[in-house]
Image 1: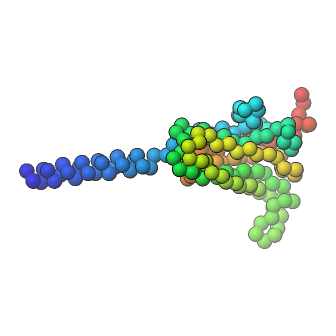
Image 2: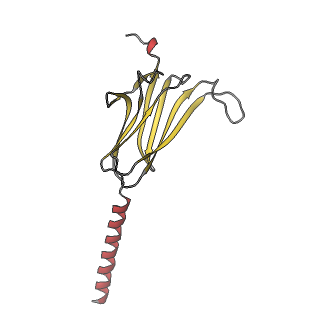
Image 3: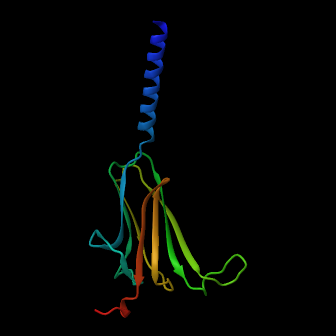
Length: 156
């Protein structure tokens, strides 16, 4: 009888401990979008024209939390872009082909349901296939490739 009570207590304690772990480690679920900001909306695109003028175009990403975070959450992003052999050098100083990376970070504030990061092109940024990766804390929320093109060279 005593061992039965002891087993029941151990099972109950283990169940309670597992339940507490799940609850405390639960992070707010989020959805992320990347594209061009337009009239308060974000137009998700796989191709973005290379426009440096911020008054004509801004692009970036938006994270929407299903439940606002209860504590500030770090947001990190990385833009991976093509590089010409003129701009990329290896550890020995030799020119080579490869990729350039631009990184950034921010904070998703506690109690806020949305985080937005506006990005702009800089003069000299390369054309071609770029990739953006975004994570909230240690959780990846966005990994997307997109083409940056010269709008003057496209037919209307």
